Image (cartoon, rainbow, N blue to C red; front, top):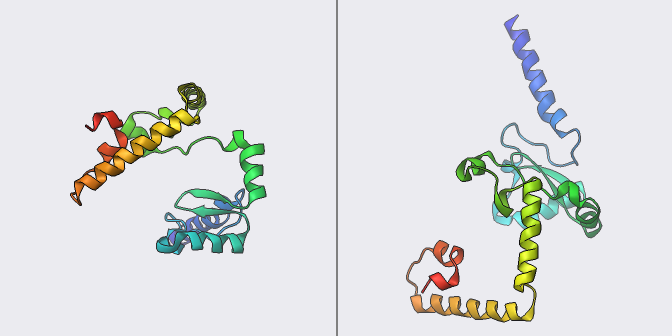
Length: 174
């Protein structure tokens, strides 16, 4: 009796893993339970690996890393997905770990709801008003990039934590 129950549970697990979870997703390589397609991935040559999957499964396919991730390739599929159906795919993936670290899904990077859309809209308008995309801003960026390069050259190979250099404003470095 116990063997029949265990066999039934195993059959349900197999059905769930290999059929039910993939039912409404584009085709792709068969995922392993719990770890997805990670064992199939050649991490040293990921770009060629993705191109091989594209040849095998088409311009739109699903990779499980370990959650399902739909990969879109091909110009027409990109236009269809991101221009015509942009509202359906414009959100951000939810991450429990990031929510615990930052005590919520706030900001442009972690948000995924109407709060995120409002913040994104405000930030884009602010950046346009500030001058992003205008020649004046381009010159300022080139000057600061040149100063950062000079800063690296003056280190003469000494180790430095890059977090401070790239996350803190340029003016606070000196």
